[in-house]
Amino acid sequence: MQSQFVSTVSVVLFVMLAGCVGGNGTSETGTGPDGNPDGDVTIVENRTAALLAAGGYTSVWEMTVTSETDGVSATSYTHAVDYENERSSFGMLVTSRDEVHTAYENFYADGTSYTRYGEGEEATYQVADGVFAPENTLFSVESFVTSGSDLATFSAAGTETYDGVTVTRYERTDQPAWIAAQGTDGEFTWTSFKYVVLVDADGLIRYESWSGDGVDEAGVETTMTFSYSLTDVGSTVVEEPGWFTAADEQTNR
Image 1 (cartoon, rainbow, N blue to C red):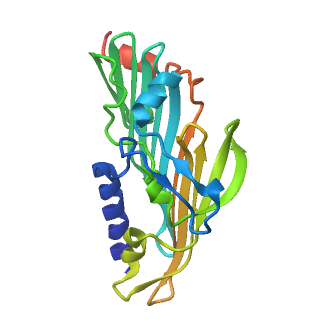
Image 2: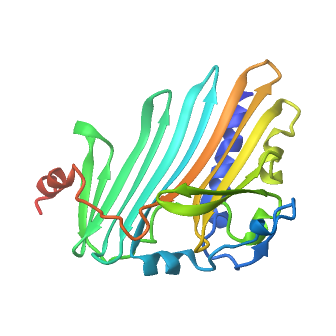
């Protein structure tokens, strides 16, 4: 059952990365089911334009599956952009049972793209001329939520501070259909679930996370968690990576 469950996680990842996560959805207003007017929110219509106007950002996307029998499998994407200085970086790391399966990083500055494949002494590099196009990453590093209407089934839970800005917190403990459906084959039963979204005054999703626990027919417990964060909006500085010199030397640049 574990292999089947992990395969459903892969389906979720594929759907997200194929473009179901947003940033360019239609801006709509939604109200939490409790009817609280403080639950009204307008998600920014064009995420890229808003972040371009801000000057830069850092976003992190992570998915983790933890099983009593299969250990921990994790996938993460990190994207940092400095629009003013035309610098960006994107990194992907895929691990399972503490073993790295995929390690990839790209850094762009001054008209040149630097890419690292692998880690340590096994790493290889590619250096090439390029143009500043920070949105052209391998995978999108964005939120599931794309409009205010997506929050219609959430309850507004007040305001708080996240990354130095005031955000409105939205919560739900029932699963969206696209998550709950992963356990409908009769072999896996979800036992708990929580979903949190933090939205700032400009309509940017600053943080989103959901996590769920479940058990298969053999009694093996599994936890699946997702998180997305958007930080350092307007203050991100993209530095040269630690492998920058090695890339230059290996490629004779």
